[in-house]
Image 1 (tube, rainbow, N blue to C red):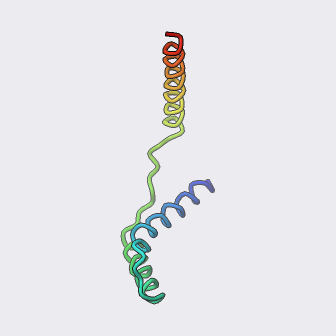
Image 2 (tube, rainbow, N blue to C red; image 1 turned 180 degrees about the vertical axis):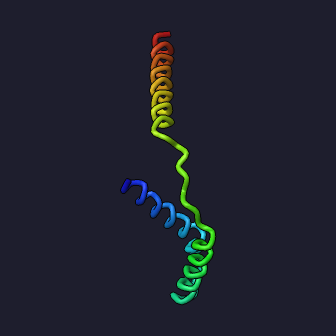
Amino acid sequence: MHASWLNQVEIYFSVVQRKVVTPNDFTDLAQVEDRLRAFEDRYNATAQPFQWKFTTSDLDDLLARLDRHTVDHQEESAVALAA
């Protein structure tokens, strides 16, 4: 459960970085504070819990496909080298 909570924090700060801090065109620290507070007000008014759609079953399927792709690629490379 801790990983999910930490992921939420990382997502939030990623959004802050992209939507508030970048571009870095502040003239003083007060302007940074104002922009962060305005973002916080907007975010809190519209934020909703993140709905995870990628399940452990989806991860298992993805890893199995990657394994098959890797094996297929290794076999193709071996055939090409033998030719």
